[in-house]
Image (tube, rainbow, N blue to C red; front, top):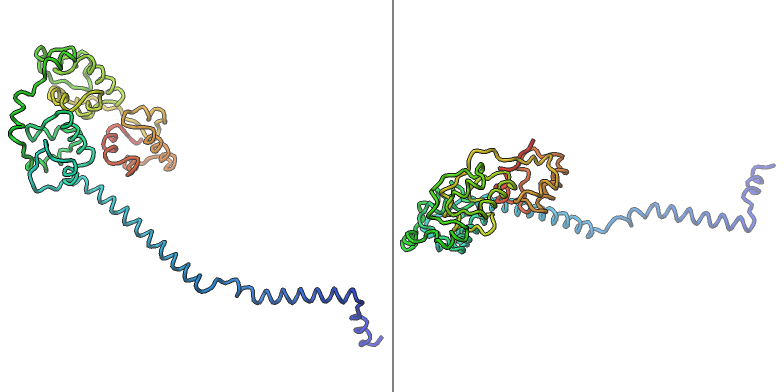
Length: 310
């Protein structure tokens, strides 16, 4: 068979085959065209690319702003412990806003205002150093600028525990001798020897000591029910913190339930400590507990003597 005749017979299709070849050819052409033009069509318009770059710049700026805010907050927190004062003040009349401006923490400022609200008065500059939370280095800076009105000083002569108040405590002040008692080792009988402490407060002091794990400051007695700064100032000179060891809580091993029993730790703080321990695996140091929301400086300072990392 001649070669030309062979090719002619090979490409000789009936009507059905011709339609099939036509459809297949059309599909091939469409595929080729798509493969050529699709990448160009799929690329985003130039303005979208520009917008994407702009968004990326905005994200970077936002990250920088967040860093600045965090840095400023850290500086602010740090500066809150730096006392800056250049004028005299009377602790009996100064406002909370002024106390904060000086640099005292919110915790200490509140204690000063609370003391005055409950009828307490500052008669000598050293009285300010007895406020719970007042650090010695803060008081050393403040002391030269404390100027107490002479009228306030005169009140100290007659502002003594009354017999009526003593009777409420089932005791008479004049019948008690001055004592100097260690509050970490004293039992309830010993505490009854302190002028101004009756059975109710003696029992409360013991119970609170057991819950805390020991006292680190006499001013922790302000935590007791109905104990105000005025009453505390009447008894503070008769008490001291003795050298009995404080019961420590190992934050790497303590259970949720046990940690929650401590009087300075509420449910949210307990959850924060336990969850962070799970995240870290274990705490390497106590400072890892610090957090502006769940563990601010005031709370950390109160808890630190009771915590340990083992």
